[in-house]
Length: 501
Ligand code: NDP
Image 1: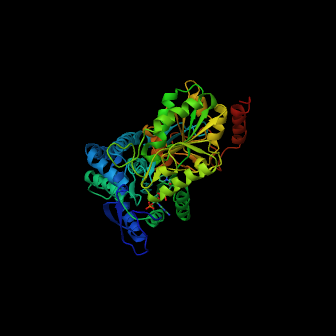
Image 2 (image 1 turned 45 degrees about the horizontal axis):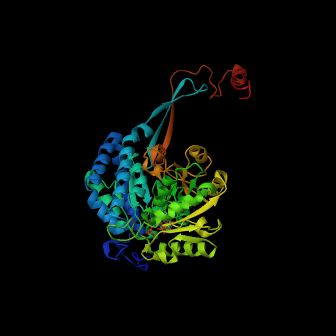
Image 3 (image 1 turned 120 degrees about the vertical axis):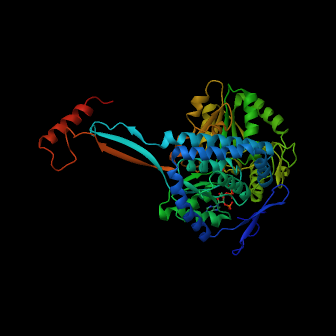
């Protein structure tokens, strides 16, 4: 990858600078860790993982909550750093941190209940035995994070992996390494004994090295294309992966929608964080009866939103310089395909900033509708009815999130959407709820972060049975009585052979 921050990547390059995307000022300098460096970090993490696991759920909870308190008490300092290195406004950085600490707190508190040993029913055939299951940490988990939510997104894996008892080696994006270092340094203040959470920095090759360094599991967030490379790198060692890629999330406006709320959610969902949100709103399908009023509302409200570096700006620059060209291309293609901009134009792209662009009449085959734009743009299409809206929303290779606006039919529409998360009468709310699993289907990836599923993602189940008393009818032996065959046959027929339901 080439970038302003990561300048031409010479093979012998040993350090790189991270830059303020708004000004180009140097934020920090970091080593490019080699494959050997990464392997050594994973080796150091192994005894640390064993030590961390021995602390138990309560011991880990105490440390993780101390870490949470450090992040919360230094919110302003951390938010300033996020503003400088990622570019987002300080208020947005505070919002991101507030969600991250909620997740950290929930994961640390829920781990014992979700992962600790619990009895399960043993069923008729093993009625003489007790049965239990517990979830054990993988050991060392590798986390490869993105730059768009440089705390909230990787912490969706890191918090849950640590709460489950794993050590973590974290490779942040080359665009946001100082933010990653802040997190790791703060963790070391509450866990000074062992390198339970380590940082490795560099480019894609460093991330690739983490996949092959002997980690027990790899959690990746980023593009679908790189997600496939990560899976391929993990395949030879059967290293399990959780892959959280982007989306092309749709917002559906039904005939009975609260239009003011729908307009507000569409504008915020599409433009906040300069549209650099994996579950951001990229497409809107509004039914014909409310389309004109909805478009008028979005046009009015989106025109008031402004990207910039000053304190009054609603969102910041495009963090990854290369993304600006992708956004420009999508706008150009949409217009070339017959679309029209009612807010903004191709001139709205003024690197490193992109001002809001609202596009109408863009054909469904256009890249602006098919591919993830990851910029402050939105397409709005008029549809006949809710059925057509659902059909078009589902006609995407992605399936991360969606939003539905309807007074009465929100749940019925949500149930027909092929995606991992849906917000009814709001946008992206599911990401704020620690108990809800987050992730997608199709090209949006698989596996889940957050919630009980997110904790189980970083642990493997061990099932145990234990004999409590001799079996009345022992079938798992060559020494079973001759009558066993008759008895078992009768039993199965009596239990399951009658009726059809
Ligand atoms: P990438 O998928 O290339 O990068 C994501 C992370 O993976 C970064 O830490 C990156 O490191 C690392 N990486 C890159 N190559 C490899 C590799 N071969 N093996 C292991 N790790 C690797 O995304 P980009 O940052 O290039 O963004 C491109 C597009 O991805 C965006 O336009 C957007 O559509 C999507 N995206 C989605 C995100 C989401 O939240 N789902 C987040 C970010 C991007 P490094 O940065 O050092 O190259």
